[in-house]
Amino acid sequence: MALDPQFRTVLDTLEANGALPLIRGSALETREHYRNLSLARRGADYVPFPVAGVSDDEIDGPAGPIRIRVYRPLDDRGGVVTYLHGGGWVVGDLDTHDPVCRKVAGETGSVVVAVDYRLAPEHPHPVPLGDAVAALRWTHAAHPDRPLAVAGDSAGASLAAGVALVARDEGIPLAAQLLWYPSTDPTQSSQSVRDNAEGYFLTASDMRWFYEQYLPGGSDDPLVDLRHADVARVAPAVVATAQFDPLRDEGDAYAERLRAAGVPVTHVPGPGLIHGYAAFIGLVAAADAAGATALGALGDLLTTAR
Image (cartoon, rainbow, N blue to C red; front, side, top):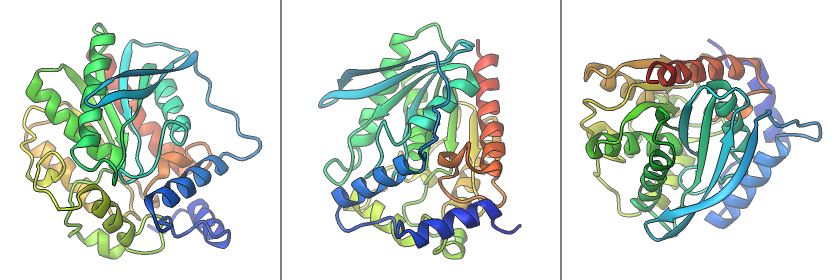
């Protein structure tokens, strides 16, 4: 299938406006660029997806307070989701992913706890993962009667997968995990990395740079190199991938590894889509459709667990 024509327009516009490449020298410069790009994407007529309430708070983390943002849905169906934003473990924050978290809350009818975990290179692995685990523990303690899920996109999906493994080992009753185009292979050895290396927003060189910040000395920790993780008995998973994404094959492979281990898996392929498509829900029809399928599957898992 060809690249979705709406995404072709998006990519051409980003290129014409000088918004690409994504990496801009230092981590600080790249963070500022990514934040500006995320906020500008909403446009002057942007209307936030409606929720019943949004509040910012702080929770205790391994090395001090962690900022969180809590979304309460209009139609509360009883679940709670810890959400971990994408951005290569280097960029992204509560504001860049506010639209996505609103959509997760609304589509699943769940309280969503978005986590402002510490970022590399100042805080490389395992620091972001430790913050994410602390946030899941807090979410479970604060909402003990709600079915619990963890979710994330891109690097946040990698963190979510690691958190799901920790939850299994600690006995935290996780009902579901949503992994939107997860990064699972630090070696970047899959065919899709070569096939989609350039021209589709996230590039292979971007991923190399992100991994250099997050894993400066490399790592064989199975909580980040998920090819080697023991995935038996982890929470049921929704794994969403995108056709024109360097990370496509490793996400597909992780879904298959989960399924082979007996884990219930809903795999949502993204024909015609690019990495990061969840940020374009409401702007690109094909992203809307894939996002609705993934969030519908997550909502069903939470409803079943009640």
